[in-house]
Image 1 (cartoon, rainbow, N blue to C red):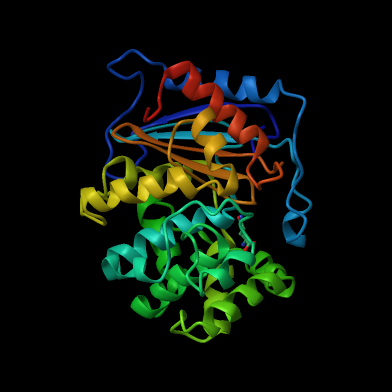
Image 2 (tube, helix red, strand yellow; image 1 turned 90 degrees about the horizontal axis):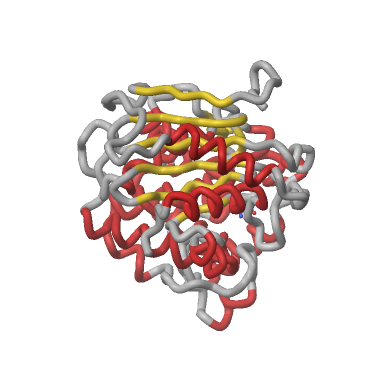
Amino acid sequence: MDADTGRATAGRTTGEAPGGVSGGVSAGGEDHQRLLEEAMAAALALPARGRSADYIPALACADPGAFGMALATVDGGLYGVGEWRRPFSIQSVSKLFTLALALAEGGDSLWQRVGREPSGNPFNSLVQLESEQGIPRNPFINAGALVATDRLLELTGDAAGAVRDFLRAESGNPDITTDDSVAASEARHGHRNAALAHFIASYGNLRNPVDSVLAHYYAHCAISASCADLALVGRFLARHGLRADGSRLLTRSEAKRVNAVLLTCGTYDAAGDFAYRVGLPGKSGVGGGILTVIPGRGALCVWSPGLDRAGNSVLGVAALDALTTATGWSIF
Ligand code: GLN
């Protein structure tokens, strides 16, 4: 369904990416638009829809069957189906940008404060933190993202602003912003995140006051952006660390490593199943978005708010599964 017209639509836009060249059917003859349409149809044919996240009240009313998907190619093509232009709450997809910016600004020392192993536990779990003495398992569970947010705050003075500005620059969309009502809703109901932050602080692993870290964490999670925006942004990882303007955010080796952590930890305790079904590095969020990287080719973002038990979008994973199975786009 198109956000503006309410009709089911598919759209192709070429040459829209900042600094990009026209896209279209690639040299290999793949028709990207048709592939997206087929992936959407395969997902929507499924009876399962999942449930919208209800622990953040502002997200609870989202329609679990809404769907959008966009592909941005490294050569500047941009393709989309369904509600691919409709902004949604990016939630934990923001953790990917927090990590990338913290590494870009501050280098490898972050890894002394956060690990890079899959947690095998839910994304908001408290249990490992005590046995591992305040060093979160990885930067994509909430505990680890709080440490990465703290690091980015230390480095920039405005972690949420740094993430927002990065998204604006890479997507070419100056309207990307935090939805303050979502951030406030999460802060009001954020006892678990507050507990995590205080617990980490008790081990000396936060440099800023707990309240500031939480405020920046909620603010970057509550950024609204569309599938088109996020697919455009995700190209920096498909381009091995190069930004849309050609400057370098991460070294090739750092980009490879971020992709590795995305693959092993980006979809929580379902990362193994995601690798099995989709075969691409990806980051999901409880708003229903999933951003995946196809190294050397582009970035794909899918959105549908109905979640499975791990917190990943049911239709989103199904559409990515259908697309990568049909195309062979996988890192394996
Ligand atoms: N802001 C959400 C939280 O802290 C993000 C969780 C997610 O998307 N998995 O719970």
